[in-house]
Length: 179
Image (cartoon, rainbow, N blue to C red; front, top):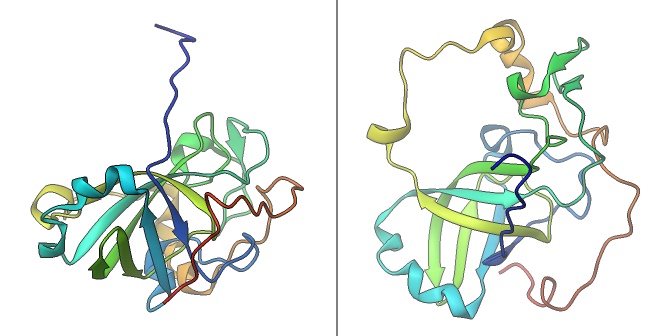
């Protein structure tokens, strides 16, 4: 199975006020109150049934603006090179991101969310309900971040992982504005 290609098809697009990675909060908890919109493509909207009962959801998405990956990176909130799997850096072998966001409303195939840390136009791969009893680990250790996690609220994306690309205006991804 090594080297086998795996292909995912986006199920929607994430809309946010951030037109480029520069200045984006680096984690959802640092983006408190920042609103976004998740537009699920119509062919997947039936899968949203019963989601309105959850206060928070996990968005799984593709980091579409990153540079080539490296197995060692200098992550946000640090000046030291770290193994990419010990970081949340977007430049990874499989550029997949996750964010836990607050679900504030659903209208058809549109999910209104808060606490976003995602660039506008990001392809959505999946949505999962956040369930504290499943996802919270009170005995978790946070490794090298222990001494740096207090920098989170003041740290923003400085562009270190993005490609030099033009902002794509594909109609499939950019035809709705935020409410």
